[in-house]
Length: 238
Image 1: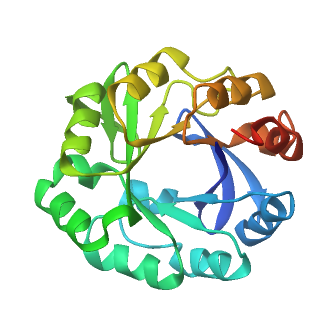
Image 2: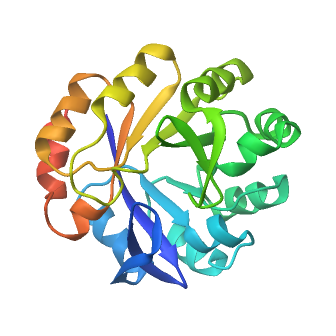
C-alpha cells in the first residue's frame, strides 16, 4: 500500500482544513519544504491539492506547485480545480505523474471522456462523499448523486484510480469511515486511495491488510499524531 502525504495549498502556503471548512484553517509553512520533508522520510508519492483552485477555479498556485514538483524526485499527483484538458496538460508538463479530477468529472461528462481518452491512467477522480452523496465545488455543495453510483460509473468509463474521501472524517483525527471504504473496495477493481480521518498506525495497518491501493495522510502527520517513518514500516510488503 502506498502512503501519500497530503500537501494542501492555499494562498501559496501549506495548510490543513477541518472537514473542508476554509474558515477552520491551520498554516504549516512552505509547500516545497514540506514536500522535501516527506520525501526525506521515505514518501513514495505526494498528494497535492490546490485549494484555491478547488474553490474558485483557476490555477492560483501553479507557480508554487511547479516549484514543488521540481524540488522532489518522487511522483506527484495534483488536484484542485482542474476543469479542462489544458490545465491537465499543464500539470503533466510540469512533471506531475497523475492529475485528479473532482467536480468536473461529475458535472461534465464530455470532459471526463476526453480526459480519459487523452491521458489514460494519468487520470484519477476524487470521489468526495458526505452522507453517501458526492460533494462538489471544494466540498461546499452536495449533489444528488450517490457516491456508490458515481464509483460504478467511473469504472465503466475506464478510470483506473479513485480517491475516496469521507468529508465528515477529514481533518478530524477520528479514524476513517471503514464501512464506506470496505463497500467501495468490494464494488470496484479500480485502484482505491482512501482519504479522510486516517489518524493512527492502527488505521494504516487495517487499510494495508485490506489491500487498499493507497492511503492519504494529512493532519495526523502535521500534528505528529502519526510518525511517517513508522507508518512506512507498517506497510512494508503490503
